[in-house]
Image (tube, rainbow over all chains, first blue to last red; front, side):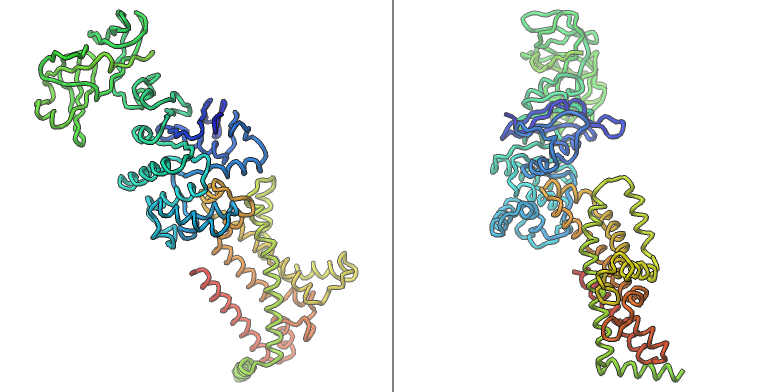
Length: 358
Length: 228
């Protein structure tokens, strides 16, 4: 039985649809990442799961129990979960008392509270801060206290809303490392929201891509990452090349897709005549000055339209009859002497192309 | 002018020598007003939370009504309590008129609007994220109220100190339902009124100074609490 399950969940704010037909089931012990851009409805969904708000329609089941019950039932169920908000707030007390709050409300023994909080302080690396006023902490420190404050209650279900979104890179890494520790130390079921695809991939067993209030695709991150169901998911998960075309021929699961005067070879079962999108991740494309005799079935020549470098990488835009974006290291771009207007060969395997319905 | 100056020096003598009557009257004033404000706080703080945290029709009207009563004349409250507790009133059978008890009840009524209204605005000042966080951590109704009051404690303490200031300095209730009975219901304000009309200026000045002194001490104590 799933630990928590939503059935046909809808939410509105005024006239605006925030959540649309959310059907999500998370199994005990699972780490699930809700991935989506800002305003996708992630916070709204997490608040509903924590029973802080009530949905417009639909049901939430916690271990099979319908949560649309009395305030008392909802409060009892809420005590079996914990929620780390995106922007954590400190109670006007010291760090120790902040972390101890949930345990006190659960009427735990004083000696137990002391033991658990001290242990938690150590896990989050804040033992020296126990007497500090929590509202004097930095954003990253407060986020760690907020995580400690939630996890110390040993919840069955831990909800985390973009726990590292508002932090600088160093604090964000610390918080992510802490979450990894918590996943390892406690066998808690976790639902974490993030706008960072890579973070979802690093932390979760399963991811769900949420766009405009809908979970468009969920599953193992590799599957979502490499085989997005549609164009929206594909572009969100970082597929920069979605080339529109028509299946021209099909043989032994290899199709040939006609696009911009060229033909792209891909692995697919779509029939001839079908209008499709060919998704190619920019990092799967190899560039060369001359035509390479590799195993890659696809090789197209074209002039470079634009080169933008960021960090150690360079993003190269090529016109092969259709626009194609490739990622290469800045170093190899320099070695090949890539520059605007220069002709290059772009190659990729048929298996690197993921074909979607259009 | 010399008369006033003499009044001052004699008043200081009364205070420094801890004149029994001055001390007794001051003590009674303090006991009655502190009791009234403490009891009113016990009722008003949870009641204000109840009003603040619940949605019901007429809530806004109720809050404006409460605010309207901030400056209700003390004699009006005194008269109301007098009528309630007079022999012919609905509570006349309790035989409480002209006792310290009924003075406490009157002062409680007097400070209720200030305590309720200012506590409600203090609670409105608490970040809703605090409330969400507490709910998500499993705080129940009473625990939540306690936490929110704690978060708003400075504003709540300000409300209590204002209420105390209004209670200790009022005369309408004390004179109407207390009756200014020497050694029983005579308090600082009623004593000043009486002694001034009788021409005993130094006694009045001494009590006036003590009243200001009480206000000062209250302020200092509150400031200390707020700085913690």
